[in-house]
Image (cartoon, rainbow, N blue to C red; front, side, top):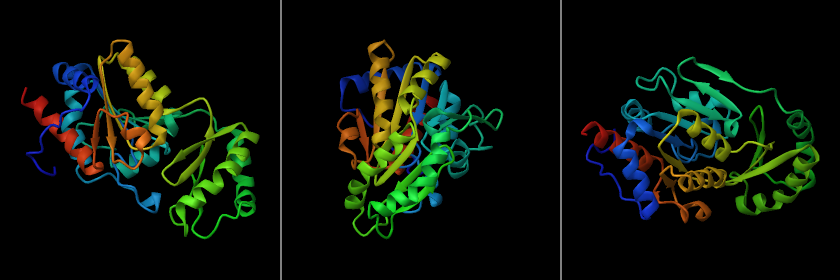
Length: 282
């Protein structure tokens, strides 16, 4: 699992140090919550080729039995994150939960089943209109649509000028989403159109309260993780210590709020492994 001597890093903030200390002191009351893309898996040009970093599953299988719960919270469909993550059937992950579509879907390792509400009809309407909206907006070569079942995303990473294409599409996609009662969730060169009312913060707070957690660690990398950061800050104010981890520095809105910033998924896996070793050593 990477470097076995990987040390446990020290958070840069007092709140983060308190969150880490609480986790280490009472691991049986700790929830480890993790984004997928950019946190457990490297960002790649084709999202269908995204996979967990090789050190992630070994780290989680060592850590999960030592804490209250591990949850992966992602914008992807839950079953997609399970497949790409390699989580199904992994030893030690029999109580893992994957909250997909920002918490609208839930996969429990104990049953292998996904629970989800009926699809929002606005998504189908947006899907039908989206090609014409992209054409009218002058979306160039390399801009493409990702089907996500309960949402649809437009990627500009492959465009000639990815950031310019991203900015040019913000307004027309926001208008399209609003016409059908959806919202636009921006990310790293991706704009996702999805139903309102659920985000990673709502999902995280509900799960922490469901399991009665006494501390929480959340790791993310993108704008969609800001809601989860806000949920951890709210939980802190309510007396539940928390540690905010940022994977990478590409999104300053996130990295400047983090208690601990790591270079990317390999380092996140290293953190999870270091936590497991320290807890196992008592």
